Length: 371
Image (cartoon, rainbow, N blue to C red; front, side, top):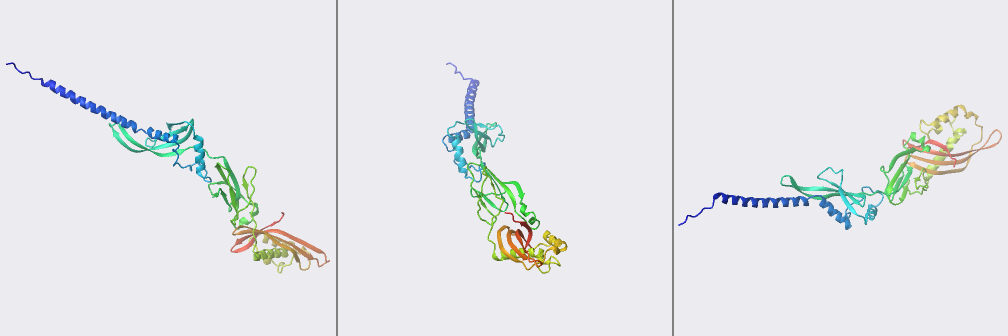
């Protein structure tokens, strides 16, 4: 009877070890392969490529606003339409921006042929570790910024600062104010007593189409204007209004009283300026002028009969603010000299500026009407 041979324990263990190692490495390789595939598929470029596909089919900018660079005076849709027309039919490519330093928010440049047309910014939604040294990331588009130029149309408008200017029915404000302003010569004395309008300059630029400009004066009335050869507008005059009958009578009487003071035809004029002081501020230059005349020159005015006023007219009533207006007064003052019966006529054709001071309308300036 022969003796049975036993398999060596070593070889059995070795075989088991080899089998385990094979299974382990098969598992490791499979795991690593899956991790690498997952890592590769989680790269942000895949999101960008999806965006590029949407550019090809024309849907990339469906929900993108075009208000950032466009004029607030035009519908952003016209910029979008122009933008899409400009890039249509071109070859689209992309690259990661060299200035993109935020790994969680990478920025990619989009090109149409060789022209940079957009920035696409991604956002890292989530990140899961893979094999300790890698991570699986989920991305989404955070923002799409189309790059486009504004138009070349625009207008410069100079108007009094209490006028309202609209471009395409949008009111201009401090955003369009250039910082340029000018005082109005007619108000050089009135400004000592009340706030007066100034001329200010507005500028609108970057429009695709020629602007439609509407101007309203300080009374809320739409005014006519003429643009210069460059299409710019300057309005430095104020519109006239209809003067109230009572106010017209008051300014006419004031003008007559002022004239009568200098011709010695108002009671008390030889003693002081009190007969006309009611119509001026206390520190008025015109009261000082009248006082100097009373003291030095009034005696030289020829004696005459009571004046007769003809051709009386109150016109060109202009309201500048709630505290300032001007009005033109014209009349012919006819006098007969008592010494020799000679006829004499003084003509007043003066623009009076009235300011509301302490709730009274007082004369703050007088200017000869030359036109």
